[in-house]
Length: 157
Image (cartoon, rainbow, N blue to C red; front, side, top):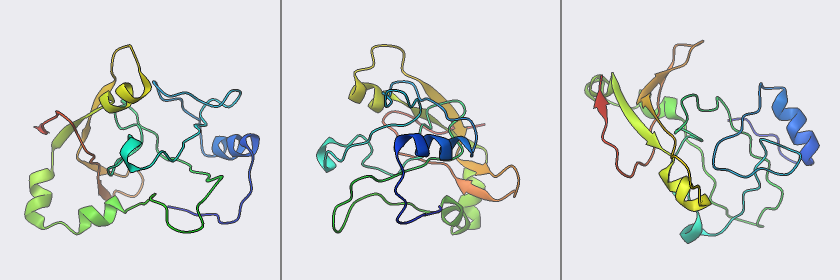
């Protein structure tokens, strides 16, 4: 995670910054700012109304989830807030050798069902299977790739 405090960036600047990292993707079922495909306006609706009140990678229900996500807070409370990050590398590295062996080769189904309900998406709900342990293509470092799931068992492949 990288942070750049005290940056004041408008939508055009955010889009330009994002494009420097690669192709900006659009996730199905989400509504983007007009004129800025790829930029979502995320509101703080409180704990009871949020669709993401659990640890999750962004858009994991896609066959190719985004490699990175960018968050540019525009309005912050004077204290607190609930956005948190954790290192899935460290989470994996902290596991026992037995648990690492158990997870090796497991795949999990990631479903967009919760997001589809939240957005009123009438079409087919996207889903994808991904390894529970992912290996970075350049460094070879392993990380967990897990999330809350409503109906999905893990599959051993």
